Every structure is written in C-alpha cells, then in structure tokens.
Image (cartoon, rainbow, N blue to C red):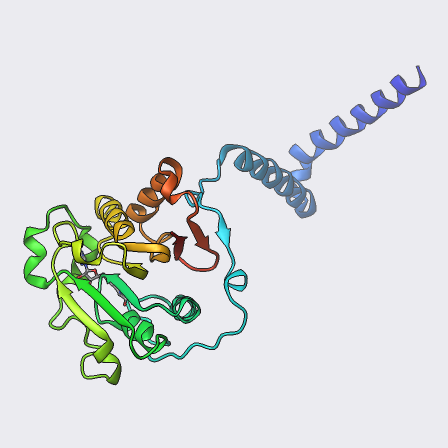
Length: 264
Ligand SMILES: C[S@@+](CC[C@H](N)C(=O)[O-])C[C@H]1O[C@@H](n2cnc3c(N)ncnc32)[C@H](O)[C@@H]1O
C-alpha cells in the first residue's frame, strides 16, 4: 500500500511537471531546453532502431603490422596521389609486400602512369621481371565487356607507363597492351609470383581478371587487388568469389587500405 501511494505521488508529480512544461513552462527557456533534450533523445533512439548498418566489406581484415614489421622499402613519387593512383600508404604496403616476397615475376593488370609498376620494380631484385598490361586508348570503344563510365579517364591518356619510361628500372618492366578479357595469359601459366589487379573496376572485369590471374600464379604466389573498398564492382565481385569459390576463401582485406590479398 505504501509503495502504491509513493508511485501515485511520483506519477502525479510527473504529470504536473509535464503539464506545466507543455503550457506555461513554454515561456521559460530552461523548460524549453529540457523539452528539446527529451525530443532529441527519443529521435536518436528511433534513428538507431531504424538504421540497419550496411557494411558490404565482409572479407576478414588483416593488419599491415601482421604482414611485416619495419618499413624498409624504397619509394619514388609516393606522396603524389592524384586520381587513379594508390594512396601513399597503399603504395608503401604494396612495396613492402613486394620486398617481403622477393618475386622473380610480377604481372600487373592496369598500368596507367606506371607509378605502382615503378615502385614494385624498385623493390625487386635486379633480375626480376614485371609485365604490365594496359588497355590502350584506342581500345576503349571495343572492349569485350563494359567498363565503368568513371574509369574512361584512366584509359584515355597520351602515354601509358610514363613514370617508368626512361627510368633505370625500366629494364625490369615489359609493357603489353590489350583488353584483359581477350588478352592471352597462356604464356604466363603457373609462373607468376606476385600479381597486382588494378585494371577495370567493373564487376565482370574484376571477376574475369581474378580468374585469369589465378590461372597464371605459381603455388605460394600472392595476388593483390586494389580498390576493394572504393568501387562497388570490385567489392561485389570479390565478396562473391570469397563466399562461393573455395579457391578465394583466404582473401584478406588489409585494414586501413582498399587492398585485398590472397596467398595462392
Ligand atoms: C586505375 S588505373 C591503374 C593504376 C595503376 N595500377 C597504379 O597503381 O598507378 C586503371 C588502368 O587499367 C586500365 N584498364 C582498364 N580496363 C582495362 C582492360 N579491360 N584491360 C586492361 N587494362 C585496362 C586503364 O587503361 C588504366 O590504365
């Protein structure tokens, strides 16, 4: 009975205060602030219930510190991060991966200016060979699959590989041209130690490139994809491979980057 009386007093007190706040209390700034705080509180509660977080990046993360300790790699043009480039940090991660793996043969899809090609070359031994495939500007209108509208500007350029042309590292680099969907990868079968996939970011191309590249890797080799978190075509294709094809079940996304890797 005592409790009931106490609760009744409490509820009556609340009604009286709420009644006052919603009428005469509206003239009082402090009361108005209290009402606003209450409103904001309920709004935020509703929002947290309504919004389902969407994180399409389902591939488990690895950390750059899990992959290597000290940064001993060499760089050039690392701070020049214009459109179409890897970020400074990503270039360091790739350079360190190359250094750690010490590959004899590298294959890259998507040369662009050759900034990553050059930095991979800088971190390989003197006999290493890097083959980099690029779609030439004149091939833009006749690709076997559709490329993304937003990447036309990377294809349209006067020179492919301008960063390494004439550079002392250029003797390690072989440029080849074509559409990755129709290019013959036959001669590289089971021979590539490290591959960098950064050509078209369209879903069909990412699937095509991932499969073609897997066929040229030697066991123990490393595939690196760029732009996993930047282009929907890339994350959709990689998520699908990760979920449905056992050959890709060990893909890892390197935290703090848009890079995904797979040790074959
Ligand atoms: C984002 S850029 C590559 C950037 C470069 N890997 C780097 O790290 O600086 C994409 C490149 O892929 C090339 N590309 C686009 N579609 C291609 C295709 N179907 N086959 C081969 N290369 C393609 C473009 O010409 C462009 O040079």
